[in-house]
Image 1 (cartoon, rainbow, N blue to C red):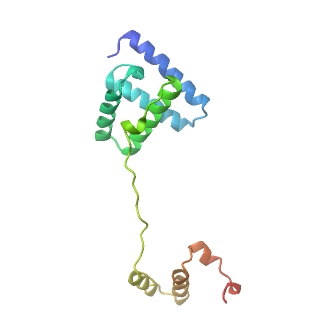
Image 2 (cartoon, rainbow, N blue to C red):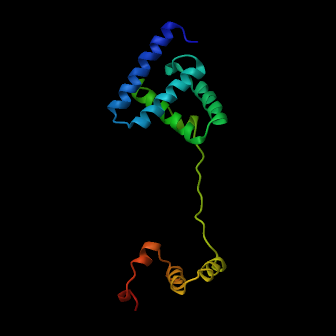
Image 3 (cartoon, rainbow, N blue to C red):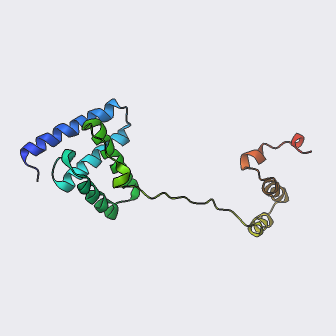
Length: 153
């Protein structure tokens, strides 16, 4: 438990953090998430977070990754980055401390056989022709819907 002097120091820093978030025009949900990040790290170390070392920050994020989702980790990283930059006037190399994985997913692409099956399973002939036209011309749905008779050569 923080002693009364540490608690007063933390309360002052926390209020400055909230003021800076408001002055920067952050939305209420962002203010809540960034404020929670500062409260969470202060509770983790049971001290104000203004003098934490890089090793302590790494320890905190390892623990956070084990217990929370990556979206929470990113919110905490961004909230603490804002706290260090705007409240403490310190710069940190956050990518050296924590870097969420980059997910690159490929879009679902149907094989020609799957497209043929999809078109053949469509009951009404006009929809079959519509889907066939979209597929064969490589059109998006909106482009197919806006086709007119004048578009046909």
